[in-house]
Length: 559
Image 1 (cartoon, rainbow, N blue to C red):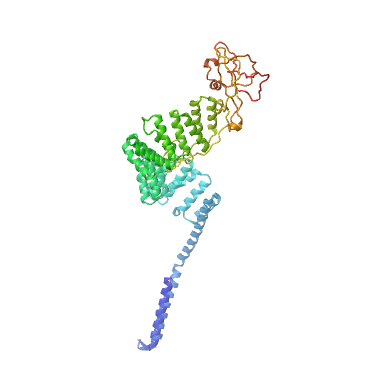
Image 2: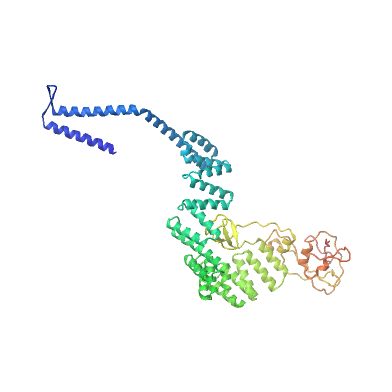
């Protein structure tokens, strides 16, 4: 554009000059070798312009002839380079699409057309092609070769980092990330991986310093940096709580102020306040967190705020906490647990059953089993609750990248990602069919007992009465996979009678019988004098029915 404007300007000046000469006629006289040459000014000016143009044209022609070989070489080199970059571009697209064969063919073309030592993209495409073809060793070797060149060192570290993550080599991936972070602190992936590594090693001060550098270089936004700082401060406070309660208090309170919705921060802040006798302020921290999201660890910390409280005082605190977020399953569970510990079994049962009506879960069934055992001692009903707990939905837990932990952690143990743990229900897993003796006892289900019937005492010293029950239907149990069974209860009979014994049909695990008949002493299961058969009452087989008013029993051999 500038050249066009310059050309137009020159033409304009020439036009103006010739017009000026045309308006002012005159002659130009030149004396050469005793002779005079006389021409007009217009002719003289035109001749001068023509001579200058001719000289310039001649110079351009001569220059073109002299530089033509170099120009030809440059033209063919540029054409070859363009073809090489076209092949390289096609290969990168093929590698991104997963077409390893096309990528390999484009690599060969690019190597012929481009200088491999001067074009690092060829090395990258070669490494990616090796990864697509499953040649992991070749890919790692090519990435390691990139480390020798300062221009491709960061690219090689990135490739080795991704390859180590793919193979599950966490230590190696973190090593490459830390080296990349030292080489280029402004690279987000390297800084994040190095931050996760420092967090895993417990280097909280180093992690906080690195986070501040990321914030200064605007690698992370302010809100995310604030959240991650709160997570690091929480982890630091948890680790130093036992050794330095005062320092842990300031750290935990700062973390709680930065992220009030972070449950572990609220819990550790409350614990540090409780340890120094500030019950009111610690309770407010937990109550605020409970209003945001009820959590069982918050309830546990709140109820046991003071070590000297009685069980009734803890029950009162549980009721108060539940009133802040009524009709929530965690509120009912907190009351049920505190009521069970205080001996208020009726209230505990009502609270646990309220959980089952709103959000059935495993912990509620297990709690009802404890309540049943404490209230009635009915082992049949206890096992009924336990059998339902086997198939009940799982309780929420701390989950990060598919990893389930009983405790919160600042970073994921799988990827090292900071603030990865979430309080949610893990992925449901299908339970196996209950077929073993232990599983049978754990999942055994019964219904309310029917009128008792008398049977022959099995051990002369202790006459017993067999209480036979009807097997619970699958609809009543709510579980189609649990084996039908009944419970045997023994007590002294009024009129023991002789009854025939049926033919042995199956073998029973002695441990199962021992758990069902806890009244028998252990020595009654085996004979010390000789190897003989013992007859024990067992649950009725649904295929066997009473005949002529007589109850059939089964005979089992114990080995």
